[in-house]
Length: 241
Image (cartoon, rainbow, N blue to C red; front, side, top):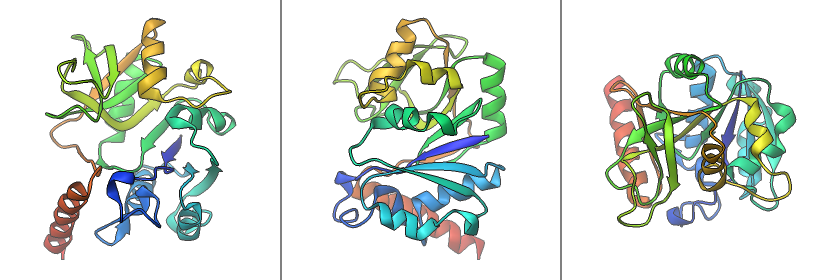
């Protein structure tokens, strides 16, 4: 199985930390966020990884090289102009074979990939979006689900009063290769803003995998988030010593 780590974000809300670093290269507990995600994939046996680059790309390349030092094989895709989450996938169309993962690598995750993939294959959808519950959904992609976990509506960053649920995109997607047919070639595109709503209009089967109590996501959108997550992981390191 192959995976794409989205690594092109500039992280403007995290400046000055991101003035000379891509957002996913901000360190948490002594390692860049992106390295935590590479290690996560390697632990689950996923060795073929693509990364898209834009802001300060040399920082990522100099750190990871070809990936062999981390037990993986990395393919880089540089974007002079940002292509959006879906546009990046379209550019890497030849890289993917069968079912694949897309991970927004400016977050940290701890999920059971076997459980997630079993859910995806049992439901036989074109896409599965990992969801977590969040009180403030104003900066997230929000999904409404039916009683069978099928997504019935998806709104990216809803305006006040228009939230359709509190289940939001955790930044982990399981996609079938058929999704590529619905992503335009010529323009940037985003899964949350364009592709998911378009797939739903065409009655395609999208499902939401809700994080279990033993699974976790740590989002790092602002300086306060970085400080919070840094403290959590520093305590974990201390407790493990």
